[in-house]
Amino acid sequence: MEDAGPSVAVENLVKRFGDFTAVDHVSFAAARGEIMGFLGPNGAGKSTIIRMLCGLLRPTEGRAFVAGLDVAQEAETVRQRIGYMSQKFSLYNDLSVVENLRFFGGMYGVKGAELRQQSEWAVELAGLRGHEGGITGELSSAWKQRLALGCAVLHHPPILFLDEPTSGVDPISRRQFWELIHQMAASGVTVFVSTHYMDEAEYCHRLALIHRGRLVALGTPTELKRHALRGGLLLVECAPLGEALEVLAQAPGVLEVAVFGNALHVVVHEVAPAIDALPRLLIARGLGCTRIEAIMPSLEDIFVQQIGAQAARAEAVS
Amino acid sequence: MAEDGDVIVADGLLKRFGEVTAVDHLAFAVHRAEIFGLVGPDGAGKTTTLRMLAGVLTPDGGSAVVDGCDVRQQAEAVKGRISYMPQRFGLYEDLSVDENIRFYADLFKLSRAEREAHAARLLAASGMGEFRQRLAGQLSGGMKQKLGLICALIHTPSVLLLDEPTTGVDPVSRRDFWRILYSLLSEHVTVLLSTSYLDEAERCHRLALLHKGRLLACDTPAELKRRLHGEVVVITSSAPRAVRDTLANADGVSSRVLVGDGVHLVVDVASRRIPELEQRLRNADVTFVDVARSEPTVEDFFVSAVQPDAEARP
Image (cartoon, rainbow over all chains, first blue to last red; front, side):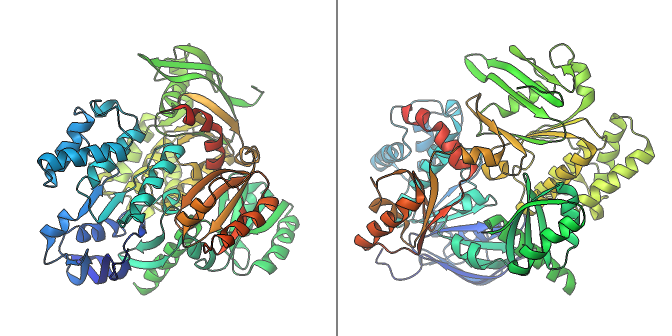
């Protein structure tokens, strides 16, 4: 951990495809051992950034350094220093656990005695001891996921990219998986996670919110929850929900209303006056209101608001 | 547990595939005009259950009644009362949005006027009004899912069955999706959907938590959270691993989960344990921002309900 420089540094990165700007002047730095999440809707530019960091796409403008290497100049070397695990775990289902590890090791140029040693290490890491000969297709999704991680880190990359790594996995296995990722980070690996699931975002040290190719927010999950929301969030228990939603959506000072089970989440300009005014408004319309209180926004509330604001700004410009 | 007004009643539902029991004596009931979630990880039996309720897979045991029709005796009648959106909904990628909608409207024998009225409302609610001429194959993942929902809803079914409708859909499209679902309740449509995302489960009126084909619990999200033994405490810190390690074996703590900028604990009594935990961290010189009680999540309950089983596993 004594390395002073950042593990990944991105300066004014731009990628254009014809007239379309997929990545628009993005800058950030990630320290060694940091777990950084990329959040954004489909097509926001997350994977374009990741492809540039992996040396698979050349930036149009700006620079990116991965493990001290300029991705535009040394793409080949960069690819040897990274591990990549995709959401669909590109494992060979009809090969055994060990055969998959050997195959991926070979792809990363790990050979001979080193490959055997690394495979042993990866089996241990993935908790697959005793199942080395098992056919991959017959493993549970949680085990496949750990095997995919083993394959991605077989060559000890200092940088690891994960694409929605725990989609569909049960919560206990998911917690164990993240425990493993945190261990790797503590040993100095820098981890990038691309996701649009807030459950996964919570496990990251810092989050970068990407929308329309731009970095729109950057911070720890707690910083974002405590400071990134414009206005305050109220939980309102009321009935009937559908009518209450219509009334509140039109009320002064209300920015956004969404249904959550048997209650509404209402984003307001100012919390104190709204706690007073909204129940009265509901009751005046003949609707019930049994509870109203300020609550901590979720990462999803932040995400939706930031993206809504960006979209509104973009429309105002065009 | 079945009552008048229950639209779906599953009782002892069983399905085996060879040696594997995919759905293991499942029983639950869904009320009219509620959004009910089948919630659990991959392999929990969600898809198999939905397929049996849709009348496309025959149960090996037990019974299920959907809108008054028995799925074993009256599978064809069931199909007329439901709309079923499987994980891979059959959109025609080389047809436009409008043409896909017309295809499904014809399948359900809608008049042109009915089709136009429904399509206009659904397209507006999903923010897709300006994409009517676009080929389905050129839509984003979120828009494809919304188009699937529009096609499934082009006739107003009594029961809507959705299999993981929001998988791969970004949060903004997901909110549109949920807004459409809630808008159906005023038309007395009953919605049964599956999801593997426990944060999404919080949006359902009631849910059945499934694990390995079995029912872990069935209730409202609020009630499930109340059933958690203990309270949740969140410690915010820039050194979460140090916090977690310092609090190993702390009294009254039953679970410690590392998150990005802190540790998520389940403790017996928060008011008593918070000062103890703070003291312990100070004594060990571990930096932290704060230690605060927090609302439990459905995930907290799920983990506590499954844990004994998990510990027995290798």
